[in-house]
Image (cartoon, rainbow, N blue to C red):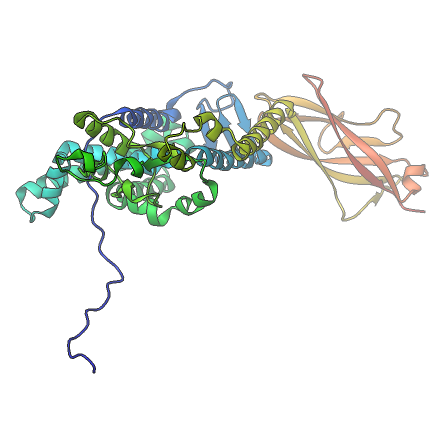
Length: 474
């Protein structure tokens, strides 16, 4: 018989409950402060570091020169054709994430991820203006009044200033920082700079101030990928259930575990989770729950480490009272050694490529229309496009020639003596003519291999490219 009572529809979505982490002191909180200060200092100050490269090159230590199509990093200069260096660094970054996640869990997420760093900074501002956790929860629940409007407005203003500095610092990596700063202040900077700052300001303000843990849980793909990187040997944050349960606040501690169910670990968690529920996708292994729990254990006279960095493989051994496996054996195992070997191999290859690369590079392309030209005296001439990339910081002469004892003649269009004056840090393209005398073997042959040399007139360095000379084939 059908019931006349209407069923309550199932809720498929619940509104987000803001997370208000409580202030905590301890080793891991101090470590996070240090990492935040160092990373933010590097990000904000790096564009202002000067590096003398000579009169014709920018003096900014780190610069992505879009106009000049080059990347400068202190003494290193990367050209567009050397993008493999950037690709190699990206591969190293990926392998580094695999390595650290396999060994230490989401240590990157908990300490150095930009979302974590800026969220920590925004929470610090929030705590400074509104108070600690209980005061912030009370303010959030109360109706809008003068106090709430004043504190929220001030907080949002400080957040907006931080976000503006964040977006502004980013654009300084793509132009000379002092020059761009003057342009921004006098409203003479390119519109793309203002647009980029506006977008980055808005995203930093929204992600660090409001989205916070939602970015880590829903937007970031790494929590899903990490499942394939971690195993029972991975050192991550865990709760020693065998020691803490049954939890409770009763005075008779004989029948209870060490956990007094104070929820200190939950109140300090920036993700709003309970680590005692086991491994969770939202946990970023920041260690704040360890600091909070250790503080409580000190107060109740229990050993520290109820919540700690540990390997899941050690749980059974601890329950049985056996000694745990040394940390080094968890970290240095076949999987992490393989990741480290691959990471080191890529790094070594990039280092070798950086030191053996030539400061003079050329390109050579034969013109195919027409394949050859018959001169008035019967000589056969081929045309080539020669590109000379002068990677020095000064103008230099380069001499174009053929191999010794070559019966062919070579000349550069518009010059005498086959000399090319190549400006500093540019690629100069010229037309090169190679001519075979009338009746010569090369003029009558179909295709003759030749080698064109380019010599640096100052250093004497030589490079060459092989090509073919097209004759009449008769």
